Length: 362
Ligand SMILES: Cc1cc2nc3c(=O)[nH]c(=O)nc-3n(C[C@H](O)[C@H](O)[C@H](O)COP(=O)(O)OP(=O)(O)OC[C@H]3O[C@@H](n4cnc5c(N)ncnc54)[C@H](O)[C@@H]3O)c2cc1C
Image (tube, rainbow, N blue to C red; front, side):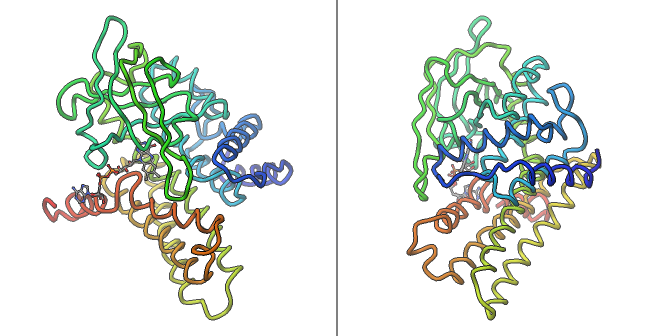
């Protein structure tokens, strides 16, 4: 199916099948809505396009997933950050898990039966991820994992975790596992964000037994796995987020008056720029080119556009953020995290300076 045909099919299906969320904006409701949307789109087939047949997909280019995400975002059917997690976790499983494990598990993520989380960051190991210390030691047919993760999005809702552990020194001593979150020895303590939502958590591992066949790749493949996430995190996920940001620009437009054009125009330009860049990134990915440090440019552009947009909303909708608790405030506060998650703005600029511009070490 080509992209135009796919988009038309999705649009007319969504016109006939109302998946709009209810009035409850709590995180519980958002997670339930996400599962509902995934389930309906999976059953109708749309969620299976762009994924390989080995995991129950219907094939076609990854761009089909970007189009689906764009339609979901444009209609505000699911919170965009939550919806996008599939884009990172499913490709990782397809590339690194044993074939039978991926075939069994990935459909459960796509069809909304399960939520998964990404256990990478630790206290003291965020930007410097390679310093992580959660330890995994072999024990017969199993591994035993002990340590702590932090900022793990949706851990309290998750059935599984893609977990990075230390099995030896240096980058080559990082090993990934696919861990059942109900394993004895795992404790999840939700953390509250500044917009008042328990969106992420601390996750403690106390001598947790993980079967050896849950290793993703081989011992020492964990760093490469983390690097391989980036093309997905910064292509289809970004396309979806940009579509969401355009809906918010439209809302600001609806609520402002003539005379605010310069500020709105500047916010639009930032969004348009990152959309053009993202389109090009996806085109390069589709043509088989490897994506690397160049995606740091996409990350900087996206975070800049997102924060600029919500700054514009703050300036043009007086009081909407400061005085009225509601979606504008929540989204404004969340936009501050855009320069932190997925690699901070400073780290992206270091990468651009060092690896793209050859300006030497920071
Ligand atoms: C909303 C949200 C969701 C998240 N979800 C997840 C998740 O699901 N799973 C997960 O594993 N992690 C998650 N994270 C964590 C995220 O990946 C880290 O916050 C991020 O990598 C930064 O690490 P840190 O918080 O330890 O900050 P630090 O690395 O301690 O950085 C602190 C400050 O120092 C700066 N800094 C650090 N090193 C340098 C340097 N060399 N040069 C210049 N400046 C530097 C940083 O830019 C930053 O401003 C999430 C974070 C957020 C905000």
